[in-house]
Amino acid sequence: MKFFLQNVGWKSKVTLKRATFSISINKLVAVGSSLKKGQTLYCYLAADEQQRPLMVVYLDGKEKEQENTPAKTDVTDI
Image (cartoon, rainbow, N blue to C red):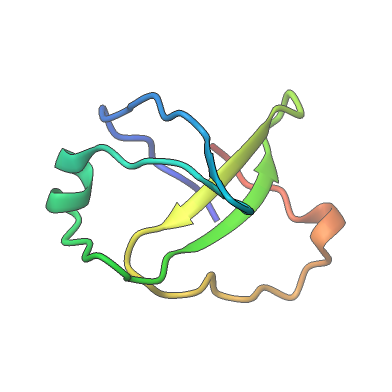
């Protein structure tokens, strides 16, 4: 799987409310992606080629398609 970065980016702060951590999504991104309050998003942890941690969030409400490769060797070009 390859990712194509678009010219949209934002900085998010991690917040803690009781026992739940949250991050925010820019309102323009949420509106432009037709996100609704309460919608389920699927998120996955990954690492780039420099082993920097990243999170992939699918905004269409669908899970990642399963591949037949083990998680340790699941490398994605970014």
